[in-house]
Amino acid sequence: MLWDENRRLLRAFLQMEIPTARLPVEFRFINHETTLADVARRLEIPSRQRTILLNAGDAAGYPFPETESGLLEMRVMEYELPYGSAVILMPEMPFATDSLIRPVYYRRMGVFVGLPE
Image (cartoon, rainbow, N blue to C red; front, side, top):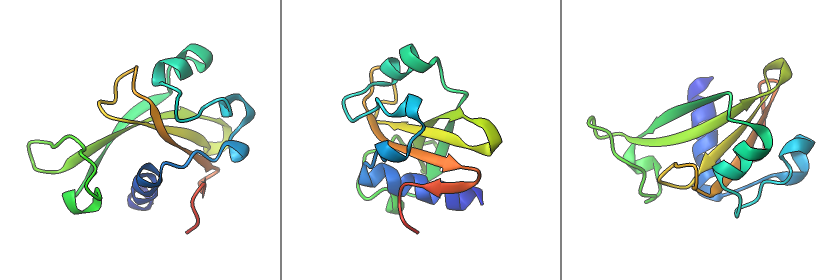
């Protein structure tokens, strides 16, 4: 399950989709000009941050930072919602508070909303 989620998150990142109309109302202000700091000011800090490790061949040429082991890392910020749902923000590099949001992914009760299977 986690591997499938990571693949979907990478695909969302590379396609830069923000499914505004499908997001919970409090997240619909987010667009490609919104920074992580903008989101934190309106919604507080994310519930958690995590790093997704990628093979270089999966990154489609995007310059993710490289780890010591040669894998690439993509950082995501999750806002946990009730019933196992989450809104997942993926900022541009360098993954700092002033980084722009690239895509937003909505995981609803274990189901992914955003990109077709």
